[in-house]
Length: 324
Image 1: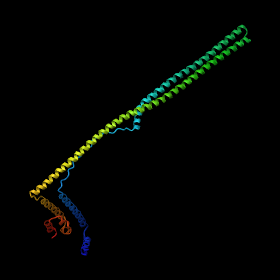
Image 2: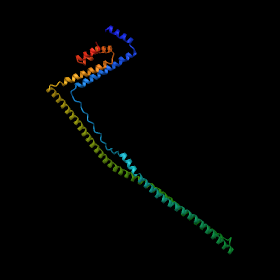
Image 3: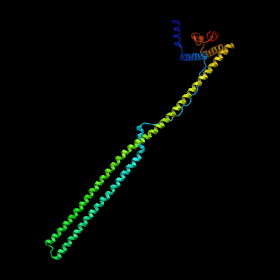
Image 4: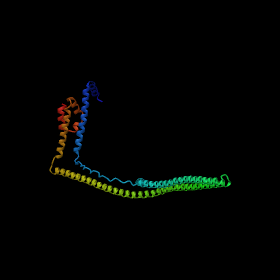
């Protein structure tokens, strides 16, 4: 360690202003940028290979949408298609049952009215017959005789018999109507059950039909998309081939140019190198000119980068300008 240099640094740091410190930091950043720029330019110049050309890719072709072929999904579609048919059939079954029940209810009402009418007629006929018997007995003077009483009792028996027959006939008719009502409801339930079985068959048939159509459409979409993929692959292969052909031509041209330089005794390569060192000199000179003379001299003397990237002549030209 050089103690004198370290003490000098410490002394300078102690008395440097904040602006001076910032200026040095900025110049250090600029110096690093300068080095990167020069090295990059030299690296690019070293390569004799031509730059590859990237041809634009063709836009991707629009594919056909694949068709859903899941059987459960297609069954739901078939069910939705046949919902209207099922609803119409159910409505027809219910309407038929309702009409038949309405007819029986009308008949039941008619039977009840007929029974009430029959009972009234029986009562009216009995009352009239009883009056006739009583009047006849009065005329004959046997109103309280056993004959009159027997005649009244016979009429009462006939009346009771007529009433019983009417009620029995009515009850039998109502039982039959009730049986017919039950039969209608049983028929309605049976028809609904038959419809459900028919619907299952129709849905299965429709599902199979939709599946066949979906699979056909999906095959067509897949075939079309595969054709597009093949077309895109061919276009990409053609693009890459064209790129390679262009690069091969560029390589051939570069080789021909080098051969021409050799046969013609050209100093093109030396000219390129001279231009590179001249460019480096101009960039370094522009950087050092932004610094005060003492900082420029210190950098020029202390950093080997400058000497390494200039000819002896150009380095000492800078040295005479900034470090003497």
